[in-house]
Image (spheres, one colour):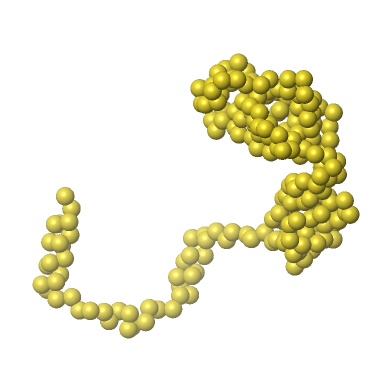
Length: 234
């Protein structure tokens, strides 16, 4: 989806190493790279607040917006981003220049709506196995999500990619027979009570005699076993 958001970026100069990237972050900015559209890659730094606003928007990383660098503006998408593992802060961004007249491949979320009949009347659980769908379309036709009503989904039924609403403007690249969701039953855990355990012990058949007739232990073997056991403990 094309948005009206404009992100201002400042070109980075000098060496592009860990120390340089650290200095950018100390200033409260994020190191980033802009590439694509048969143009040279450019190292820049951007405001993390603007990037977070886009990533947490309705269209997320599929948002297409203007990136302004040194007076030049280009349509871009966020194609890669990295978080610091402990504090969870953004530490790097990759932007890709987008040509609005050329199809691109993106992944869009699958949104399930309604309450499945297998959940409503039979007490099952809706299990969504596929959460994103790979599609190809023009940048201006990227959907926010692929929504499908699962109200008629019952036990034994599987919702597949072929069941999702299709559009002439959006080509599905994910295989049509791939499962998206189904309704599963809740397995109750049986906890054994002392009475149940006692009843099971009474009901259990006696151990066969052939099991009891094992190798006869000789007096020498019986004496050797404790000695070996003592020898193994330090």
